[in-house]
Picture 1 (cartoon, one colour):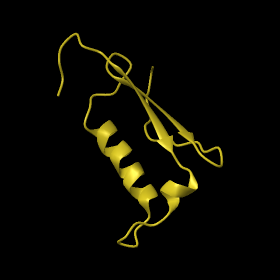
Picture 2 (cartoon, rainbow, N blue to C red):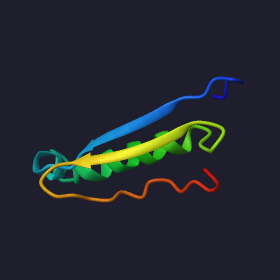
Picture 3 (cartoon, rainbow, N blue to C red):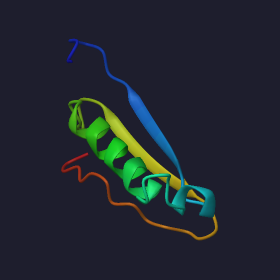
Picture 4 (tube, rainbow, N blue to C red):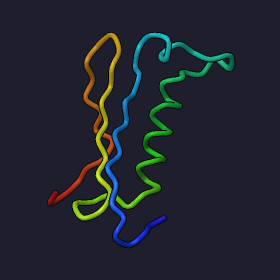
Length: 74
């Protein structure tokens, strides 16, 4: 959804600790659900220099760089 004149900044704070990395009851890695959610969220909004800005930070047992989006001319 796009509302004219309404710009927002979104910060995704992503837990990548061991409890998230564990498999769930179906035997699937929960980490993939977290990443899929973040990607789906970013893909569902208008992201750009003059539109919504998105940042992603992860925390856990190690430092990770998560290149979820690529912005040009921001």
